[in-house]
Length: 147
Length: 142
Image (tube, rainbow over the protein chains, first blue to last red):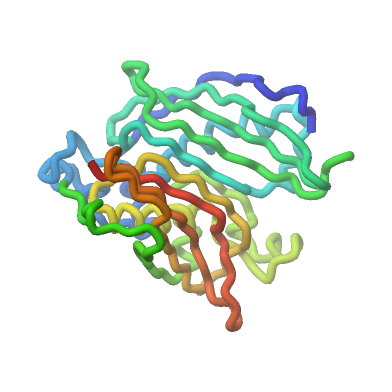
């Protein structure tokens, strides 16, 4: 892996939180709380809109991280990669209708033992430019250090 | 929505929540479609065997989603969840029972911040494995 790419930023990614996609996500994870499934129930509970579950930003991250992991300059062997860590810092919950953007960045790239680690950070912002959530994914490339 | 837990009732060292689910193949397939993560490790048994597993494994994020459901069910108001950081340390196989658990580490009455150790465990042939470990969550209750 090319550790010199630490700090590199990539192309901005746009993403709208779609109601059907949130429902599909809830079905897949077994989330039955009505505030994540039904706008009327969410409003009754005091929210402006139906919320997206806390790990829903992963849908945007998967779009976001593609251009990083496929970056030829980085030299990552994607077949050797596993998801090692995930962090979210929430400023507010994601809501249906949110129009979001993020600029993915290599926050860190390093070796530890025979493994290599890549930390991809995305500060996900809404239309007004306010940060909604900061997502940090650590990918582990098994046994590729020194190669 | 009112929080279900009151900060005055919480004590460091106490268990906060425990939520179980059986991990089904069709749910992991649905998760691949819903999340967009189509890695064959989570869909193709032959591929999973070729990299040393007995069959497909669940996405790490699938386990993290169950963990955050356990947290938001416990706390009541999803807005209370301020931060979560997890480590994925072991695979989860199909038809295993995944248990999301949390324990209270710190209670700060002045700020309303509560920090928890959180993890996900499975019982595999009588041994406790931790697919999610060394992980923390922070909720704000005021």
